Structure formats: structure tokens, C-alpha cells
Image (spheres, each protein chain N blue to C red):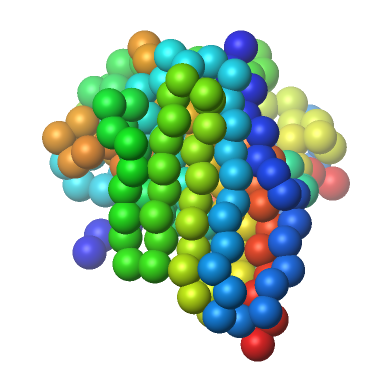
Length: 112
Length: 113
């Protein structure tokens, strides 16, 4: 059974800092990995999707990496802004399954 | 651009009642997913449909059923509601041709009293 763990559970940083969110998973038979953002009481917004054959994806100030062999992914946020404050979740789609397994998220607070 | 549309946004039901949640995926998306997110929890996968056929099943109780119709909209039917069913229910859609990113709706907040 795929287990997805995110560290830290919560993070508070001053505006302008670069930061790294971590995601680890137990089953390397993944099809893809996605990073999502969720604002309180709202839906999830897909930020980046990395296929199992890829090593990283970039979108603006966001960069996500994937290391299947070690079961890890990182989300790097450059020059953080108060508007980045949200919960960030990583999710794994396992090969052969049309379903995502989510981590419990990292709650990020960027202080102005 | 069109997004995933869910209705209703909020629903209040009594124990043992029935609820129906609706989802309209992004046009030309071939896969629909249902997720349940309890307070302070991560989303839990319930069920998915690919081209109107059930493609995968997660932790969906037997009291729940879902289907996808010919126009690709999907409905989640929940019977004999329990207090523990109170949660945010998300629908998401994706497309193999579109790179398979999941696009989520805003969710239906179900409260069972």
C-alpha cells in the first residue's frame, strides 16, 4: 500500500525566503507525482505534475524534483510571498491505478 | 477557461437521509474522480470513471454509489447518511491527452446533523 509522507507539517517563513517542502513515498511503482495547493475550505489547484520518467518540472517560482529510487520529491519555492500561504499536498498516482494517494500536506505561512 | 463544476456547494442533511452530489467535468476530459476530505484530513480517494466505466475504487462505503452519464457528468449518491459522512467532497477530472493533470472542483460541503 502506497504511503505518502510530507515534512514538515507546518512551516512559517518571512517573505522573500526560498524554501523546500519534502514528500516521500514508499512504493516506487509510480506513474506520476503531482503537487497541489489548497487554500482553507477551497478546492485543490494542481501546481506541477512530474511523470515517472522525468526528474523535475518548473513553473515560475516553483520547481519540483522527483527521485524515484529514493522515494522522494521536493517542491522548491523561490522568493516566497504572503500569497503563497496555503497547504501544499503531494500526491502519487500509482502505475495501473486511476487514483491519487495524498500526503497529509505542509501548511505554509509566509509572513509579510 | 471552463473548470470542474460541482453542485450543490453546501448541503445539510439529517442522519439516515440521502444525498446526491453532482459533478460536471471539464469538456473533453475522459476521467472523473471523487474524493472525500474530512476536517483537517487529506483527501481520500473514493471512486473514478474512465469513459463512463468505473475504472478504480477506493475507500467508498457500500452506502455510496456513483455513476457517469452519457454527457460525462457524474453523480455521487449517498444513502443512510451518518454523522461521520460530514466532509468536503471533491470531484476532479483529467484527460490522458491533456497530460493527466487533475483539475479539482470547488467541492460540496456536506454536513450531516
